[in-house]
Figure 1 (tube, helix red, strand yellow):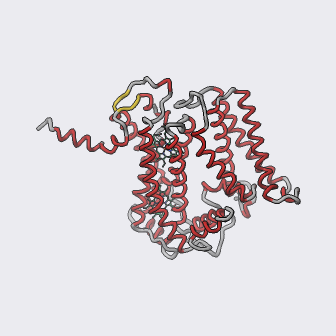
Figure 2 (cartoon, protein in one colour):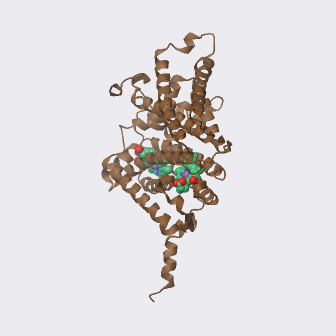
Figure 3 (cartoon, protein in one colour):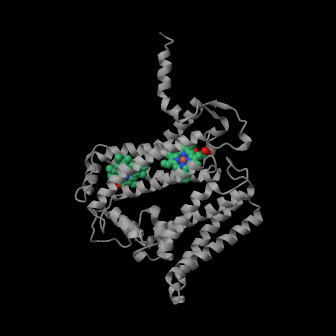
Length: 433
Ligand code: HEM
Ligand code: HEM
C-alpha cells in the first residue's frame, strides 16, 4: 500500500481551492515579487481574517446603545483572548485600507488597468469603496465618544448633496440623529450586506484575473518559460501570508484598539473629527464650497477613475514599473509639487480674507467653489505641460503624474486635518491639538 493513489488524490484535494483560483502553470516573469508585491493576495487574506474575527466578535457584541459599549468592555476585560480578537479585527481593518490602496497603486504603475483588465479595475474600485464602507460602518459599533461623533460628522457631509442628500442621510441614520436605528442599520450593513457584496465582487475580481490570463506580463517577458503553479507560486503566497499574519499578531499584542468613554449624545468633543480616511474630505470642506468639496470634486475623481481604462495609450509600459527615467523624475516632481501646492493653498486660505468678502456681488458657489477650482486646475495643467515638454513623457507617464499629484494632495489634506486642526477646527501646532 505504499504507492497509494489515494494519498496523491488527497494531496491534490488539499490544494484544490488554491489551484482552482490559479491556472496550472504560470509564467516565470510573473513570480517576481516586485511585480505585484503580493498585495492582492494580502488584501484577500485580510478580508478572510476580518470575516473570521468579525463572526467571532458577533457572539459577544450587542448592537444597542444601552449595551454596545459594555459588551465591548466586557469582551476586552473578561473574555479569554477577547481583547486580542478585537485588536486583530481593528488593525486588520486599517491594514486592509492601506493594502488595497497600495494594490491599486501597483496596478496603476504597472499599467494593469487597461483592456483586458478593465473589468478587474472597475470592480476593484467598487471593492475599495466597500473596504472603506466596512471600516466606516464598523467604526460606530463600539459606541464610544470617538465613534459616535465621528459618524455624526461624516454623515452630516451627506446633507451637502443637493436634492437627495438629506434623504440619504436620514435613510442611513434611520432618523434625524445618530441613535438606536443608526446602530441597527450600521450593524446590519457591517455584518451582513457589505461582507456579502464583498465576497460576490471578490469572486468576480478573481475570475476576471484568470480570464485575462493571470497578472500582467511585460512585452519583453512574453517568451519567459511557464512553470508549475505549485510549488512555485503557492509557496511564495504562503510566505507572504505568514509574514503578514505574524505582523498583524505582533501589532495586536503590542497595541490596543482605542476605546474612549461611552458615547454621550449631548456632549460633543471639540473638534469633532471624521475617521482618518475621511479627514481629507473634512479638510477640503474648510476651503471649498460644500457642493464642490462633497459632490463636484469626489464625483469628478470617481468618474475619471472609471474612465481611466478607456483612455487611449499607445505606449509600451504595461507590466513595467516606471517605463523611462523621465517617468521616475516626473513622479518625484509631482510628489513634491502636490505637497507644495496643497500647503500653499492651505496657507493662502488661512491668510487671505474670505473670498466671499472680496467679491460680495458673486454667489458663494462661484467665489468659494468655481474660482478656486479653476485656479487649481490651471496650475495643475501648466505644471503637467511643463513636465511633458521637459521630460518628453508618454501618455501613461502623464496619467501617473496626475495620480501622484492628487494622492499627495489628499495625503497633505488628511495630515493637516488630523494633526494641525484643533479647537473649532482652527490651524494649530500638533502639540496644541
Ligand atoms: C472587510 C471586512 C471588515 C472590516 C474592514 C471591518 C472593520 C471593522 C472596524 C473598523 C470595526 C471597529 C473596531 C474597533 O472597535 O475599533 C469593526 C467592528 C466590528 N466588526 Fe467588523 N469589519 C469587517 C467585517 C466584519 C464581519 C464580516 C463581521 C461579522 C460578521 C464583523 C463584525 C464586527 C463586530 C461585531 C464589531 C464590533 C466589535 C468592535 O468594535 O470591536 N466585521 N469592524
Ligand atoms: C479587497 C480588495 C482586493 C482584493 C482582495 C484584490 C485581490 C487581487 C488579487 C489577488 C490580484 C492578483 C494578484 C495581484 O495583483 O497582487 C488582483 C489583481 C488585480 N486587481 Fe485587485 N484586489 C482588491 C482590490 C482592488 C482594487 C482597489 C483595484 C483597483 C481599483 C484592483 C484592481 C486589480 C486589477 C486591475 C488587477 C489585475 C492586475 C494584473 O493583471 O496585473 N483590485 N487583485
